[in-house]
Length: 257
Ligand SMILES: Nc1nc2c(c(=O)[nH]1)N[C@H]1C(S)=C(S)[C@@H](COP(=O)(O)O)O[C@H]1N2
Ligand SMILES: [Mo]
Image (cartoon, rainbow, N blue to C red; front, side, top):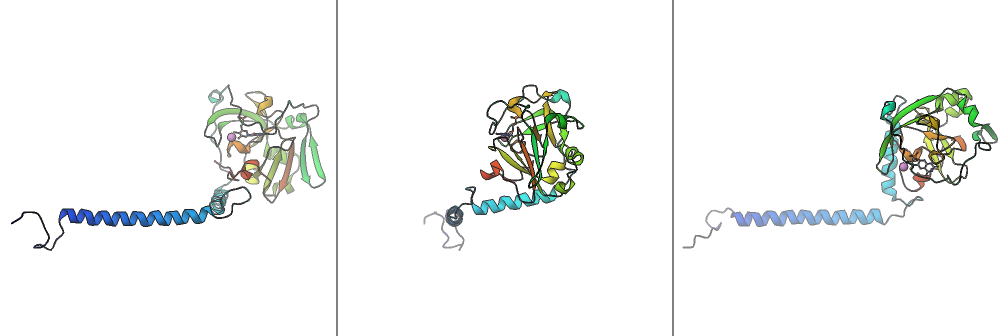
C-alpha cells in the first residue's frame, strides 16, 4: 500500500491540494482586479482633456479638494514664524517669468484697478509710507525645496484699509500681473487678507534684489511659492478666478500649504 497522502479515505484535501486551490483563487482575484483596473484606466485616459490638458475626472477630484481646503480655511490659519537668526542669507532665486531686463522705479507704478476704468496709480514711496511689517517664515516651492527667509513690506490688509478698498475686499479674488503680462496669479481674498500676507519691498533688511521681484512682490506665507508673484505691476479684484499661470499648466489653483 502506498503511503502517498490522499483524500480518498479522509474526505479532506491534502496540503498540496489546499495550496493549489488557494493559489488558483488568489490568481483569479488578481486577474479580475487587473482587468477592472485596466478598464477604469482606459475609461479615464480616453476622456477628452480639459482646457489645461488635464484629465477631467482627476481635475474634478482636484477641484473638490480645493473646495474642502477653502471651506476649512479661516483667517486664523497662519504660517509658523521664525527668528531672524534662522533666516538664510543666500536666498534661492527660482522662476524668472515676466522678469526680463532691469526694472526702473523712475517709471514703475503699481496700478490698482479698483473697478473697470478706475485705476489707482501708486509709486514705491507711497507704499513705503505705510506701516512696515516683517515676516520670517519657511518659503515652500512645489518643486520640493523650502528655506526660512526674511521679508518686509506693507501688509496687504493695511494697504486695503489705507486706500479704502473695502468694496474690493468683498470680492472673492485678487489678481496680480507682471509689467509684461507674462506671469500672473490669482489668490483668494481670505488668504490675501491673512495678516502675514505682504506687498513686499525688502528682503533681509535691504531693497528686493531685481531677480527676487524688485521693486514689489507678493509674500503670501499660507501658499506655495508659485503664488508669490515677483515684480507686481497690476492688481485687480474679481469674483471669478483670475487667470493663473501655473493653474493653466494643471497645478492646483488654491495652492495652499
Ligand atoms: N514674476 C514671477 N514671479 C514668480 C515666479 C516667476 O517665474 N515669475 N516664480 C514663482 C515660483 S515657482 C517661486 S518658488 C518663487 C521663488 O521666489 P524666489 O526667486 O524669491 O525664491 O517665485 C514665484 N514668483
Ligand atoms: Mo516654485
